[in-house]
Image (cartoon, rainbow, N blue to C red; front, side, top):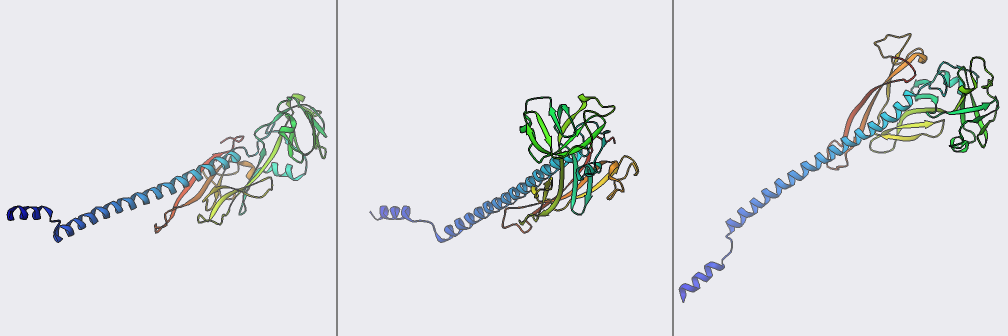
Length: 290
């Protein structure tokens, strides 16, 4: 009877103090290792997220700016057509690329142009009925009207059917110009954009902005810290050299962009939350040879 009691007592006893302490130490080691792995993975995730954000913003900045740079000075007609008029739009189109402390300004015709069936200095009528003129142009739009020989600019005053009427006469009659057939007439919107870097009021400090046709700036890409441009000239410069300030932008045929980029990690525990990279690219202007 006594022997059975001792066996039952032995079966009911728990861990000893030493065993409990060993188990606790082993548990803490496992927990510490798991915590270290978790923190490492969290830092890696934050770094990758920041790097992906930098790359995405760089891609957006590059694609949108280079679209404008490639189109600098592009015309709805021939790039050899004479630009007439002394208005601000004609003046800007004669020097379609400018760069200063306030940013880079690009000037061109819109990518889409529309054929003109007939016209005069005061109005033009489109060839196609679809899309309708009211879907293409709006009152107060600035448009380029040109043929193979001459180019001019005007403000849209009214649109009726396929006819676009101007607020003031063009500096030439597109239908009655020597050496230019009526079939060569086209019309397109005038495009002038200023690209610049400004404060965004967030942790990333600065962003790339664009002002279209003199309107308020719109944020394009977060984290662009600055924008540095260098220019290659087809004439008047050294063929192998990119200049910071060319004496004549008329001969510029390529632009080199350099833009430091920054993304801020969302991790609050990171000592340095900034992920910094630099975007660098060279863009040729479409209507000028290299």
